[in-house]
Amino acid sequence: MLTAERRQFILEILNKDKKVLSSELSADLKVSEDTIRRDLRELAEAGLLQRVHGGALLKSPATASYADRQKQAPKEKEAIARAAAKLVRPRQVVILDGGTTTLQVARHLPLDLQATIVTNSPPIAIALAEHPQIEVVMLGGQLYKKALVNVGAATIEALGMIRADLCLLGVCSLHPEVGISVTNLDEAHVKRAMIQGAAEVVGLVTAQKLDTAATYVVESIQALTYLVTAATVPHEMLVAYKDLDITIIRDEVG
Image 1 (tube, rainbow, N blue to C red):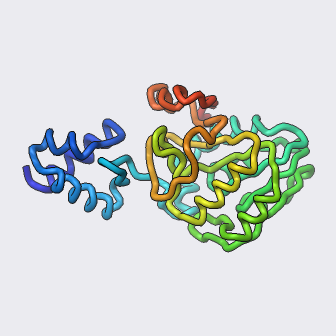
Image 2 (cartoon, rainbow, N blue to C red):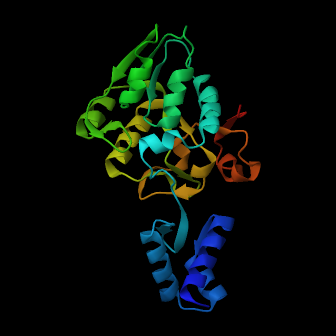
């Protein structure tokens, strides 16, 4: 088998099984594990998978620009946002993480809702500026332009002073074994501080982010109280998460 054929086989198995193990690939393809590790390394460098100890997982799709991500799965994100917005109760303090799905949550909050929204996202703060009864607390820091969120020591310090009722977390990657992960280290620290400052944590996850991994781990999957996704996500994709006692909430795509 040629190198290109072998690597295409690896990608096909990865897309089917959601993970590959170096030892199993070595046996199936009758090549050394060193050869498989080299294949995985070069496929990772090409942005086609995420290497982990002993093999590889699907790579996080959250590498596009904010503008491009706004165009991805808009109906699915709207369904997730509708379901997530219903979890916010009157007079709660809610941490609303940055992201294109969480921006939709801000747009779906009822106009009669009285609450305090804490966010590190300038687009979310602007979206809520005209809301008649929501108080907006904007977290400072350095703007991470790719994701349009504030990050850094100032952001984390401010989060350390807040005890929120709820955190609505934008999820870059979610995997039952790896946990919650992102592509930027500063953003990982901020998300961890958000989780630690909230009584309940809601992960907002589109289908393409399930069973994927990124470079920087935020927290284990047990950090989530709820996982909100769309009803179009196949049940079999959610079994591993249900087995970890995470409450799954699904809404129909309009």
